[in-house]
Image (cartoon, rainbow, N blue to C red; front, side, top):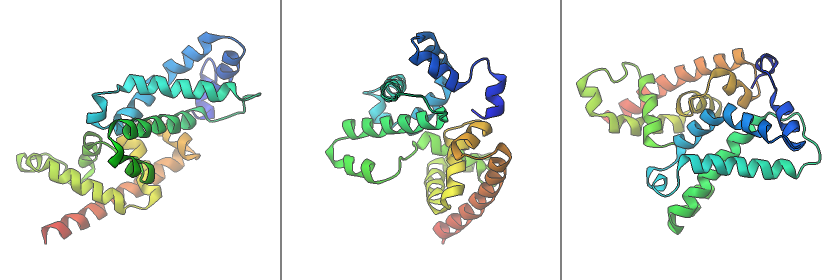
Amino acid sequence: MDSSDQNNCEDSDSSLLRRYLGGDDGALASLCVRYAQPLNRIVSSYLDPLVARRVSESDLVQETWMVAVKKLKNKSEIPEIALFPWLREIARERVIDAHRMHRGAEKRNVYREQHLAATDASVSQLIRLVPGGLDSPSQLAIKEESTTRVRQTLDRLNSKAREIIVLRFIERHEMRRCAEILGTSTEAAKSRQRRALADFAELYEQVDKGQSQ
């Protein structure tokens, strides 16, 4: 949460963390409520549907908090940390571990060595960024093919552009949370998004032309 947003909140993240470590369990409950939806969106964006049959999104969010609490209790003092970006990384790690455990040995090296892949359902949300969208019946009929092209387009984007698109349109965070994760201002995050969307549209057209030849 941006500092301006925290000032408008009844309690800042750091205040709630200090209260929790001082014995106030209600403070942790407040943090869990504050970040319930963002953490659920993160997990759902990456959790393989096959793995989701064995472990639920809520289980992984709960594991996220269990890991976070353990780490916090190992600290003698609570620094002025940006809590949500830290929780996001823990949540993503929990999804990776779930994939390693439930997808079998042949998949474990993939999840260890490559970036966390968004689900097809999450990636399909990016199709609406494509010029023309999916308004016509013929476009809707090729949704699966379009999803493949979207993945290829994401792979071609530079890391900064890909990061903001993932945060905004796959993990579906508000701009202020994107800015917090990126360690920048909201206005700077907005500017990055504008450039990223322009690059995405241009690269998608290149991928589309390449596949049609």
